[in-house]
Length: 132
Image (tube, rainbow, N blue to C red):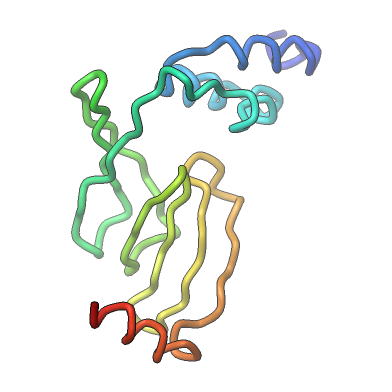
């Protein structure tokens, strides 16, 4: 029944969700609700960014600290095992240890992945950046 709500109603509801935690839960209800849970439908005016807590590379769990609620959230990302993770502007950048493949991943939509050029091809740029 809830999965059959009109898309414009779901978008209207999504635009009224204030808490990021609630927005994650909203998008997890079902596929139709997830399709309305886009960054364009989420108001960031009252949001404080979550901080990604460093973890060892052999786990698929990443922890995020919510400054506003003083709470830690654990999210499972099985596709990032064996990778270093960085975050910026709501995306995760992963760098695999073995072959240095780099990709951008949307943390809430696991299917949204953008493959970036291999770091080995651009190693002089990386060395130059690390030397500063």
